[in-house]
Amino acid sequence: MKKIFFIVVILSLFLLTGCGKYNEKSIVKEINKKINSMTGYQVEGDMEIYNGEDVYKYDVISSYENDNYRVSLTNKSNNHEQIILRNADGVYVLTPSLNKSFKFQSNWPNNSSQVYILQSLQNDMNEDESLKLEQSDNGYMLTLKLANSNNKNLVSQKIYLDKKLNFTKVEVFDELGNKQIKMNFKSVDTKATFNNKYFSTSENMKTSEDTSNNENDSNSKNNNSKTEKSDETTILEESIYPMYLPSGTYLSEEESVSKEDGDRIIMTFAGESPFILVEESIASTQEMEIIPVNGEPTMLMDTIGALSESSVNFISNGVEYYIASESLTTQEIIQVAESINSIPVMK
Image (cartoon, rainbow, N blue to C red; front, side, top):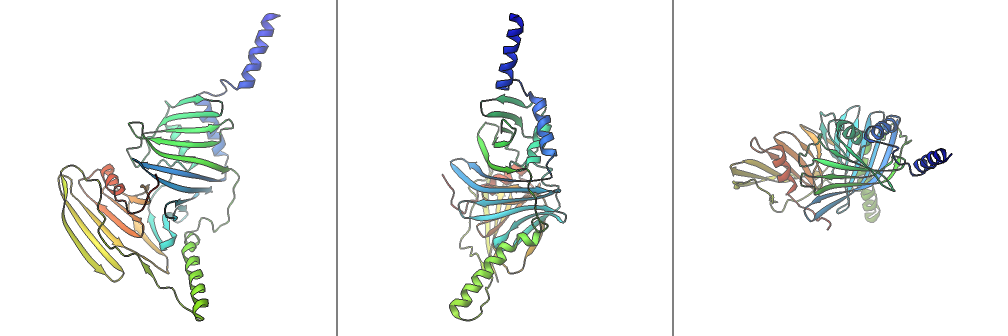
């Protein structure tokens, strides 16, 4: 009788605490089942990217349906929005305020790790057979390697889930254990549906068009006549130099070229790891401009760039940058790009 009573007590404690409900394999299996059952979802949250004492903060809205993806990233420092879009036509990085878009020949997001895409986190968990599971009163934490990243400085991550296996937070670390990225999940709608226009490239560019139209309407009323909004160009008043240079590398030449729509500055860096840096003022246009680029969409500190093995192309604060080198590693190209800071950051 005592033995039976003891067994009943143990079973009761097991059911109440949930202790031992999941191990590493079973929790991944359950998460796979949960995500694979979704036909569409929308994630809302905020993301922080760390660079020493500087913190870049973003509002994030990530949406998925029928192999289409849309990720809106709005920089809280300057309210600058970029959209990563995957639809039947390809992969794009849109900058609606400038009416410009980079178009990629890419398998994004399946070929890289993204903290705001559920399938990407799922892939990370499935790829690391040595991941570790810890349980707390609030839920679960998975610690795993990060092998599928464009930025080789990012090597591990912690994924936090509540007791119902909903994602609550993701943290990404470098090889020294320093936190590089944090994504907080505010809400996850696992039954979200979208209309046909939601993942359309042209429809997502209408933010720029609507703003222009509103300004035109305001000007028309003030002047009692119809006016047309002219293209706006960011003036590149002076060169913006990278704060990081590889050892034995120095600026050897700088050339400024005037254009009809602004300026172009070409810097040549010589030495042990030579490279070229081009800075160019860009204009907001009335018609959508799609620029084909090589590489993969890659999150830098304050923007999304197009990263290839020997170059990176990105737009920051109304200036387009292009870095190219046959000597720099991909990681060094990222370091140079991320050291070019032309906007304020949050402490």
